[in-house]
View 1 (cartoon, helix red, strand yellow):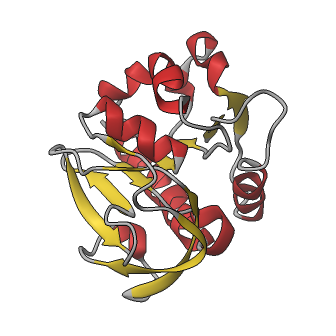
View 2: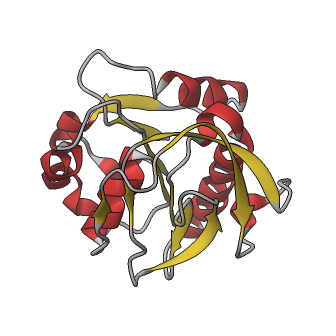
Length: 193
């Protein structure tokens, strides 16, 4: 598994909880900074997790050139907060500034069932920590929402590409565990061809 740190070099706040979940699940991983992406052979990884970031307003436009490969990537991806914004923008979503802010615990409601929600109730606690959000790209289905932010979790209509506005690494590690299972299943299916 590859974890891409969307924070600036040396700031690992959003990666460490993800790493702990992967360690607990005995899943090997490597963490890199987003700026290292051009030097990485991504085909070695069965799945990729894109972390959040504490950086301000210009993160999406600044980071976008490092993530254009996602448009053609077929392996599973899970984007969190900043990762959600970057993926959304790549697929034509609009960045929404300061209209759907959330801080702390929030109620997330599943609106479309998916295997990624295995073991979760229809309403579960998520952790919000954002000022910006994104509109829903036509390439994605809405999976979960909250009262203050419509697009809490989305999935690409044709690929195993999930993104969340909230931070599952804080309150909902089950989503990341389910993503690990999906990556293993996807990897074994690809290997059998």
